[in-house]
Image (cartoon, rainbow, N blue to C red; front, side):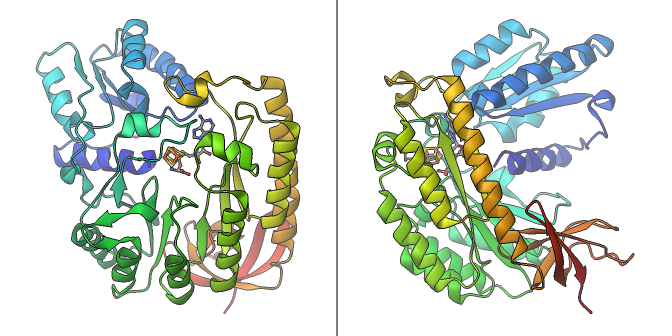
Length: 421
Ligand code: SAH
Ligand code: SF4
């Protein structure tokens, strides 16, 4: 989401005649687009500001702006203002499109701008397809989140759930495809609750799949409580929908899922997984897991390991629980000591590596259609089920083209292959 928001920021600046610099050292303006989902992200912002302070010392005209989720929190904005008085602009998540104007105001002499206003309208202006060169093109279909998982800060900094109009999403995707895009990733905190009038996520996917052209559609993130059987069947049927589902489970313990307010049980989750396996041929599955949520016992964690071994994800995004002020979990009794969290995440990483290695090695000899997103001897390409294959492009420029690649070896869950002629 943030990567895409940053792309849109580039586009908003470009429209005002401000282009990208090749490095922070050569820039007139530095924008930090922050995240506050975990503490680590916030710590990195502070570290980066240390580096920017030095740049500002050697170039006093440098304009420094900090925006995004972290600074949407009043306390964080205040703290940064005090700690880093060299910052010119602090804004949150709602005013990104106005940043170029704020920069202009600073150029005309304004000393400091703070804008944490909340505006839950769909930011039309910055939704226009931006000029990123990435093979993968992101399209926002909705903003905000209403789920209030007890560990998560997102609903507090991104506001209530709201969907873009189907016609707007469709015309953006059509434009991207017309310009040669081959992979479209639809973005939303919970894409399954997309709704524009009578159109739900199923209707949106059906409409987008009907667009002419050779491309595939991926999306994230799906919430297990809302991913419907109809959508699963549609993914299985519709060629343009990639056979990839990112379905964050967070924990394998019913007790913890309840405390997380996830609104599904392990059995519900596994039923969805079984359905995915039944209806989507060669489905690629990935997930997010949090270890060390308050009160997580060894038994709860063992249940998570069991679930991971049962589902056999292609890949897992694993996080140590990070206390976020203002969320219900932050004040729950039974916070898990850091040492135990670290020990558990190591065990989870090891379990997943074993599975990823096994799943990779059975691909040897198989041929995949890949979308090439690199060049040279170690070119890379992505499969429909979101695996990465490394191969030699033989000097042909295959960037942003589909090619058939046969997997010749697998090493530490990585796939290597050769182009099939
Ligand atoms: N809306 C998506 C993703 C939200 S944030 C979803 O519901 O899945 C991405 C991931 O960050 C989450 O899936 C979760 O695993 C992780 N995360 C969110 N808050 C966290 C916290 N306080 N500590 C650790 N991980 C967290
Ligand atoms: Fe956070 Fe839960 Fe919303 Fe995802 S669904 S953004 S984890 S509150």
